[in-house]
Image (cartoon, rainbow, N blue to C red; front, side, top):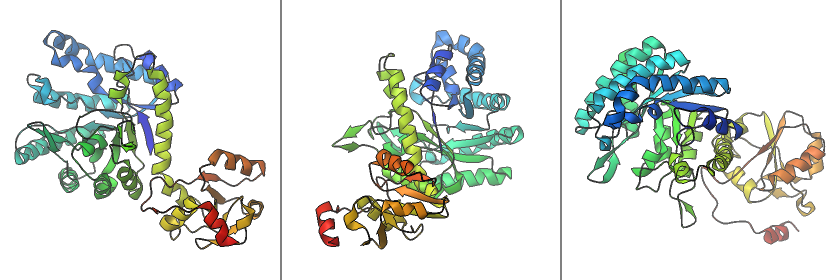
Length: 414
């Protein structure tokens, strides 16, 4: 999985250099092209003619500056106009802009375009309208050798947000497969908007596993389950936890071996901050992106090596053995506590760290202890050349709810 940062809220569309420089300085080497950044003036009568004349010019400038700074652009978003904006002829406008975006994506060397479905009408009418829409876009994308991604949406029913077009995994799968069958090629894939799932009470693990290989991109954003915001993950907290079900999203992405693009979009959080504080928030967002990538790819890191041992004989080791001990069995575990050397823990023999010197260099050492940095430094100081990875039990397929007490463990092995 590659986590990229949305430019919305940090990059000014007419003068993109400063915002893109901030993204680069904070460690982001990839971003996306959101064509919606350049079409905001369509909603204002006085600005519409100016926007229509210049939006493609502004997009050109953004792409040129991105390339100048070495930032990669692998994904683009077509403009989408919410019905609340009451833009005249918004549906026809959105269709026309989406077709233009396909051509611009070809020009920029971008391989994938995310297109949101058209709103309005009854469920049956909306499905028929979008079927026609995506067939037409699909033909243009197929000719241009561009991949399209459709997104799950919600419907506003008198203030209540309910699941809308492609808001159920079965409907999403059926729609993607139908369009691809009609086109005779895999032109259409899916982009999962995690924020929409949270607003409509959708189990994100079920959604991701239902989509399987059709899932090509994910929008990572948080909200409180009521308001359609774009908040930084884990920031909408209440009662000591997030209001968003990140556990099931991570479980689902792991289950389908997700290797696509995840777009970190926290425009609401950024716009609520002073411009002077936004660069600092970007630094934290980059740390967060690396953390989410690590969590989603946890099982992939286990699968990568022909052999592995664990470092740590405690709760985290026990979680590993419960969830992954059968599929990715370790040779043994080791621990810094000499009292447990030579004993058995969760079916594994506990070795002294010195025994790691006899491992083949292809065997990975997975640290199962929160003191990751200290233990990794200990292993490097020993001169070990083995790959060193970090295991974490915060997002597991299943959990132990009772914790091991260190004193009780010591008594057990005396």
